[in-house]
Image (cartoon, one colour):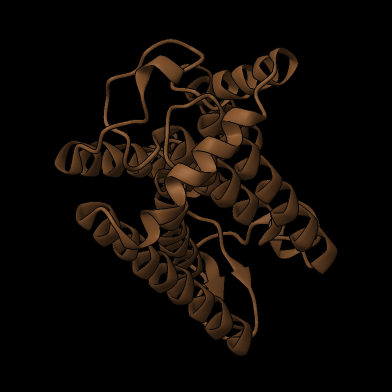
Length: 260
């Protein structure tokens, strides 16, 4: 009686696990400790800054002292060409275009990459930012600047924190980390975060210039993004960073070499 051939193909769960969970890389023990320190530092700095801003907003003093002067100064810079540029930036980082961009990036990255761990982290960070901003915004319910000075339609929703800026910060900071953390070039790291900083600056300035947020709203979004970024760095390091000699539960990612 002929024996049935042995099926050595991996099971569906194993295929899913390898694609969506497994992504491991080697680093030295000291480097891993340093990454954890950076993650904790970002989270602490972000939390301290956010609660300082929150206290100022609730007390209507402190750090909010710069809100009105900055708004008044930006009013003097308004011009038709600059307004068009700022509207374009507001659309790109807005609640319609940015989610589409994030969806396209995460889906394409997840399909093309050997492992989908990093695009899943990016999507999770973006979703976390949306949930956090909605909860905090509704609790604080801070009023926006005067509606008659808004240049892209009236908006009566909450002002603190800025959802546009938080979305831009999460996408640019977390996305940059997930890419450059697999690169050994310090130039790539510096260049990546410099570009992210420029993008965040443009996103924040566009919201302030168009009259939709106070300066402290934008800083609150940045501080929350630092906390989220710290969490992503810690989670990614815990899941993927291995010291030589530690058990590797799956195939090492290509990022362990020089390519993604």
